[in-house]
Amino acid sequence: MDSIIQLRDLSKSFGSQNVLQTINLNIPKGQIYGLLGPSGSGKTTIIKLMIGLETPSSGTVTFKGNKLKAGDLYPTIGYMAQSDALYDELTAKENLSFMASLYGLKKNERKAQIEKVMNTVDLLEHLNKPVHQYSGGMKRRLSLAIALLHDPEVLFLDEPTVGIDPVLRKEIWDSFHRLKEEGRTLIITTHVMDEAERCDVLGLLQHGEIISSDTPAGIKETYGVTSIEDVFLKNGGVSVEN
Ligand SMILES: Nc1ncnc2c1ncn2[C@@H]1O[C@H](COP(=O)(O)OP(=O)(O)OP(=O)(O)O)[C@@H](O)[C@H]1O
Image (cartoon, rainbow, N blue to C red; front, side, top):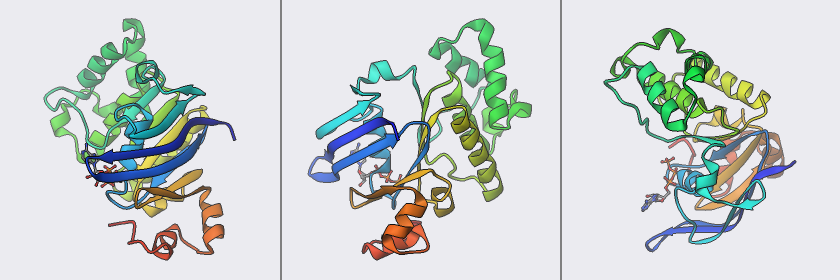
């Protein structure tokens, strides 16, 4: 599999705390890659290192074969942070229009693109509603719509389905698979097991190390377990859904 992002001997410390140790990882192109690990294991930090929001203490990040240069990256990637950065007093449409202007989308393309991304996240009928009238799940979906606005090739989604009920979660995952079918690469953090099983490739993060990076089926076979959860338990860890 071609890899789009490579982490080589990557370590990250905050002060005296070693958060990530010697991470070596290839993110395959055109796949859904899941980063799974208990709370505080370093998932968000890995994402931030991949997009240049944090700098490594040592090691390198390579994006499409070149050393990462965050400034060059932004037209190519969409990032959905763990907390929603939305203007509550504005409508969804106003939030999207504002972000579209920041992204430099041409005026005549904006309307169609806004409708397209709101359709993808199934919020089109709520386009003119102020965001403070949105539920938590609707806000997550609006954040996803914003991350999709400039048609990015690679999507980094940090716990995209937190606070979303299982039915809606399934719908959102259907849209992730559609985005993949369009040829995009998705990197998704989660601590939810049923989401982990829906990824093409999974990286398991524990105590700041990648303990496995393989298909969900491959990981279970290697560890001789029937659920991914058991890998963490077998490895002397705590349950991942904590
Ligand atoms: N800017 C920072 N300064 C100091 N410590 C930090 C900083 N960012 C993260 N950390 C620490 O690094 C560790 C990993 O945090 P990170 O947010 O990457 O974990 P996570 O796996 O994404 O957790 P969660 O699932 O709860 O979001 C934590 O102990 C956290 O306190």
